[in-house]
Length: 541
Image (cartoon, rainbow, N blue to C red; front, side, top):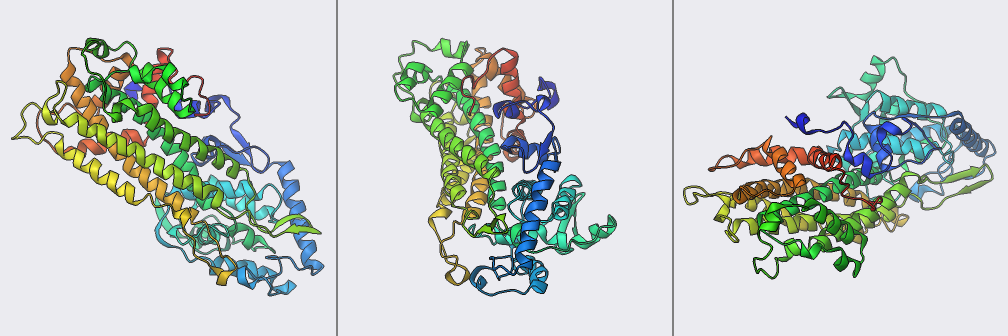
């Protein structure tokens, strides 16, 4: 039934992040073009094709020549002809440099836990190709072409979720990611898990013989943290958009006022996030009969969870914007080590350190949790039986528990999110016998914010169910055209509850339309059909 509501095949998400997919060049030049969050997701979803152009090939080959020159002249360069980490001062002979690269993938494959989502592993491949193709890492063209083969054929390596401290890059997950290059490890292919060598044999492919420095180039970098950050930016944006729409529906149900969203008020404290949310709420509530019906009710103030939506949702929007901006810097960064400028100029530095993303990921984690916090408070308000609503949002309670118990779930999820809000980046445990004596733990930050977003999607779904139930007790009055559309869209999946039923089924149905972006996309596309751009003049958001 959802397709009935889609006004176009263009997702609002793509409008929000810039040029529409249908209007942009569908080819991305690795190592040359600027990678964005939108483009990285399009590459992962097969809506854009990534290539290595002649310009990038020239840079890749030149960098590889520099590495071979270093090896042949016996110049000592970390990771090219030395050991790794605490073994950096151990010289490796020219004949052993290739064996060294093979061994580094094996020795660093120490990940544990469940596999990360396939899309995240694919984003790791995409972001690694882009970093290596810039020509500062000394890798073979053949190696990059094999990684592209994995991307294009959806042969995605199995990467365990735990084991990275986010310091010398994401060593363990990246090692697992690239084991298939040398015929080891496991891959997902067509919905099943296989030994990598089985799929290589099926396609008549041999394993790659890694050259000097290649193993180190493959496992040094922040692509695990980065790929979780890309998904966090995408998912959190969707939740923020949904929260404004759902919050407006709750306010309507509770006959709240839109006065606190006055533009003049927010210009006196001009945070961009607050100004945007206030604008969105004004547009979402425009021409509402429900709003007009109680304009002289004498109620002086609404509770904070209604009145302060611009300030609270807006603060989380600001946190999201910070994460987005830093993630897009990282998408185009070279996070390998050492960096090869030429055979006489190499720098062993710290571009692999995850701290630049670890901090904003933790900040975004708190910001996402707070959206769940305030949403739960609105769920509770809807149950109290105030301002003309029946207690527990059902006419016949006693025999029925109504919407009391779904709020238990929001309470549980909010508390779980609070326990996930300890900043992983505030911790550091030395590794590599003290050589790596400060680590970012950004890999944990990236995973954690996505766990909070999992819970937030459920919390928002429960508020949406409650608000849709409540708004029907205002009939025959109607809300604004946009919010009535949102209500009708939800009702195409879940009906009004006359009595108790298995509400987990309703919750899962509505969570699905939040998770897959269809709720936000359809509401925004309906608004566009009415010439209403909810985020007008806030292009960065």
